[in-house]
Length: 142
Image (cartoon, helix red, strand yellow):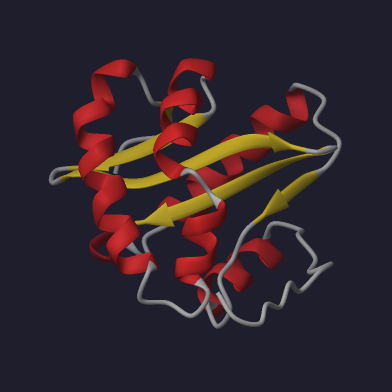
């Protein structure tokens, strides 16, 4: 695994492939379709590359993880996704630490992270990084 680095425009083709794969898997999770409907991922990814707010990890097979940060209201939010072949190897933690350290150095006061219902691994990772659940959003229909 390489150390996390900021994505560049040269990563665009790999990022699109990664986004398509991640999107297909996220849709299968409870709450995944709603999350994807609320997040304009394609636009967020493009804007994040330009703004330097997208970090990636790579392995011999290509991108293995990505973390996207964006401002929303008073907080900065981030979403993390690690390719299934690369999970439980420290990539998510390395990406999250990199982004959290950068945000803290830049003076970010509030950071929110997203986890889908039932995603215990993500919840445990976030809790180990000092996050606390503060809101459960529930939806009926749609």
